[in-house]
Image (cartoon, rainbow, N blue to C red; front, side):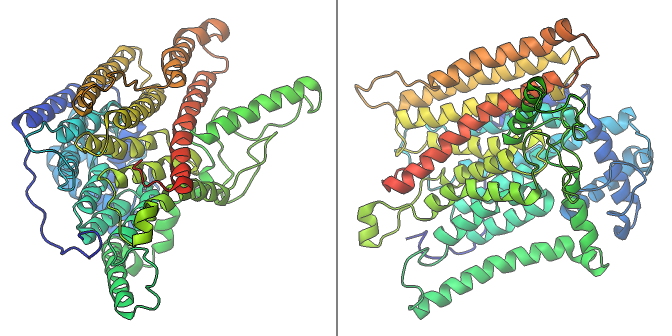
Amino acid sequence: QRLCTPPPCIPPPMVTVSAATLRAFALVTAVKLLLVPCYYSTDFEVHRNWLAVTGTRPLREWYVDTTSQWTLDYPPLFAYFESALAVVANVVDPKMLAVRATPYASSACVLFQRISVIAGDVFLAIGTWFAAMTPTTTKKKNSKTFAVASATLLVLFSPGLLLVDHVHFQYNGLGLGILVLAIGFAGRGDALFAAFFFSVAVHFKHVFLYAAPAFATHLLARHVPGGWRMGWRTDRVLLVKITRRIASYVSVAAFVTAVSLGPFIANGQLLVVTNRLFPFERGLTHAFWACNFWALYNAGDKILVKALRFSGAVSQNAVVPTANFAGGMAGAGGSFLQTHLALPAVTPSMANVLVLLSSLPALYAHAVRKSPDEARKQTKQTLNPSALPKLVAHCNSCAFYFGWHVHEKAILTVLVPFGLAVALDADDERIDAGDFAKVAGQFLFLSVVGTYALMPLLFEPWEWLLKHFILLLWVVCVVGLVRQVIETKRAPGEDSRHPLFTQTQFLFLTTCLPVVELYRTFGHFLVFGPEKMQFLPLALVSATCAAGVTHALGAQTYANVKNILVRQGKTY
């Protein structure tokens, strides 16, 4: 079987898409062009400075230059990308390559950087379409296909990507395109190509390192001769095959690492680069809390402190640790300073252990997915095409939920592979209408919650209508597409009622989020005025959305644990 023997490393087939899909991509590109004049964040100056540093300074100075406060802290492959952009930038506006402490943003500079982000999304489109057209997708002959159209809507039209990359300003689409391409190669059985592109993704943006357990589990369990089959210790032939395949993965990763880090290792700067990439001293949470466990932890600490002060258990004059409520949890990393008053301080190792433990059920379920009959017959079960992107999304969600100093924008590393998984399920005949409605509903719920949590990044008054309109329009389109897929999957005589949301999810979306938005937009000003407790609305958004993410992650973990215990071999 294809997954039981190492597949040949052959060039991938050409990606062909319909004219309608290309028109849809042209439409979303036009929308991005319309967003060019919008507000941009300090991330714009961050990338302009990186453009200047990599374009004008020798390589040995890239990770030590401190002229600007926005020092380079992305992996070398991204730095090489910025250096290549600088060649074009020098023609467009040479002044944007000046390394300076103060911001620079001419109209030519703004247009160039905006266009470079839009151009990078071409790679995301190619990767998404390539992964959506995996040949392992099962579909009856002459039946309507939805995978490519669904992937286009769920990934390329993602409101989170539109708002973060093309308004706030970042290059998430390009990095996610590399990740999705790796998923696509793995789905086609081209394990070495998958290992190569995943290694490139990690060295392009190190946040993808959290998906390494997912890729390692999949490649070892599904693309190594015999997988996890017992008896390999006594079977010398099989052991040699396994060793060769693992060595090929290591060689691919080593090659990419050598290209990425080699020049810096030669300069004796490996430690300098790694310290820039992993600055644990920045603290547990970012200034604007991501909607994860630590937002609830921080909020809980603040509430407990208030309660203890009210009861007299803590002095009213007790010193609250720096930035306890107003600016993240800075200072806890290497120094292990106290960041909470009522709850225990958290260290990077504690956060990383929680990430690993929360990922283990899904990793184990993916590795040993067999039914009891198949286990007795010693045969391998072929996972559904959506299994790997779901596993990647789950591992990334665990990292987002428990990770150290996670940025709110990291939710995109969950939503993109999850959206691809839903698109693949749309064309999989093994996924019935009810199961598809459940998975699509989970994705849509998490997308709305995660995207809403990003909205405070766009704080200009005129942007309020824009960001809500983009999200609502996308939700309407997704619901329409999902209903069409469900109708296609529905068996003759089957009940047509397949709700996308549970009652809890529906109440959360239609009650909790609107109430929070009303308070954030109008209520806080009326109650406290413009100056007092300015961080409270942001904290309320983060904590509320964290409750929604907790619900979604809990449902995923429960499904994985149930699969392990029951061992029914059902897809998830």
